[in-house]
Image (cartoon, rainbow, N blue to C red):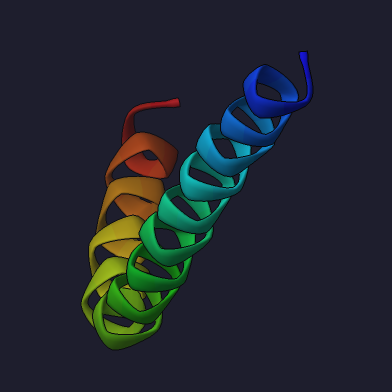
Length: 52
């Protein structure tokens, strides 16, 4: 039972670590793309505003 729970917590840690890295990478990508995204969002908002 001890070996199983150790393996389970090891797997859980691995998954948690993978998710953490995944979200950090996404956050970095979001920061680098923020300027482009803001410009695109502004264009979309202005376009919708014209037709609203």
